[in-house]
Image 1: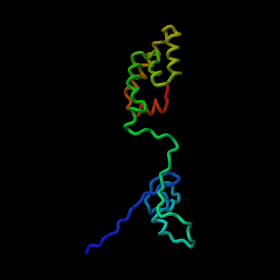
Image 2: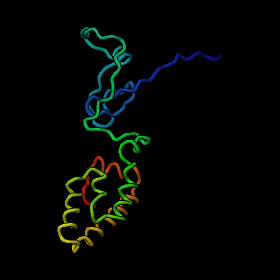
Image 3: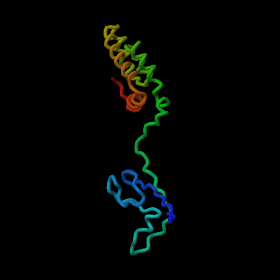
Image 4: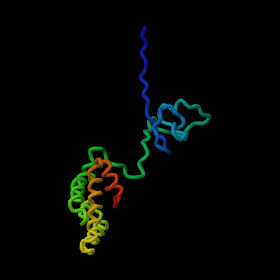
Length: 160
């Protein structure tokens, strides 16, 4: 009554041009419509008039490597620089006119500009530098760890 079905393993095939994951028996990429490479079970189902060159039965195709650095996993945001968010935010609000929060994030040029404007103007322009520091401190503290790292650590956004 019951017939036993053989187990069919479906392997994912990655497109060599765009990296899209396709089903095992697909011949064209679902994203860019490029011809997919032949692997394992698919190679035996295709009829040709000539003898194909020797290929081992199993040829795994790895997804293409990323051309640019990938952002870290969610648990790595603290290690990537999110721990500086609170320190830089508080320093921006408290002593923002001196640019110390910029030095904490590694922005030496921007920090030096804020410090020199405050000191060389004998304090007359330090009010404006302090307002900039307060705004930046609030912006640092209101961002999520992921946004903070992407914007200020990886993106290197110096001002606002």
